Image (cartoon, rainbow, N blue to C red):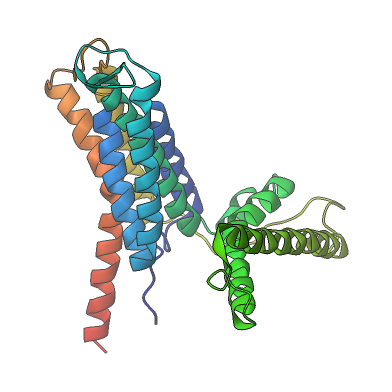
Length: 298
């Protein structure tokens, strides 16, 4: 028995798909600093729970991207009453800075949720959900999910091989030499991807792909645990929806920044959203506790 970082490893694929579709959809559609901030915190914790320390470079890169969106937005939009300072004679306002932070937080949270979903919604689960109904879409989704990790491994192998013969980035002279090394690596990756595409197409054709309807096998069963989890998600979604209808997802940025009044329904919406975004982390903690307890009983 091995510990797993797949926080939805024992869940039916329908539950996994419904959860991430809802979380990512709300994160991208509800433009509120409260919702974006909570989603970013939940996504960061879930990414750390799934990937461990290997998630730190990804989180750092997304933090830089979000900071860039936040800080650059007031340079293009000068609306707002609270002028912090001027840049090239143009006002740099707090209201537009807050709006940029909301957009950057929502973008970063969505990217992190996609990263977590790529680990939880495995190729096997995607095939189970869509293989019989949309085999072409399933194949495309599976290849896309494999694309980035495969490219990363291939790029690392190429860089190490070139460094082994003295042609690595560290051995290049100046910026021009480093650019040439990078272009060579990109050219090799492009050629490799084209060859892999031809090989994949030939393999699918040899297996009769596209010759008729396909059947999908799955070992998944919708049990009482999935039902309880779906019921919990339904209750939280109802509370969040009621809060959004009452204004929990609204925020006034211009001419002055203002959040909605924290009445009962608004608080219910915020608390429900907090519970929804923290659910993967709570499941991961519960799974880790069960794993540790099983080790003690050995």
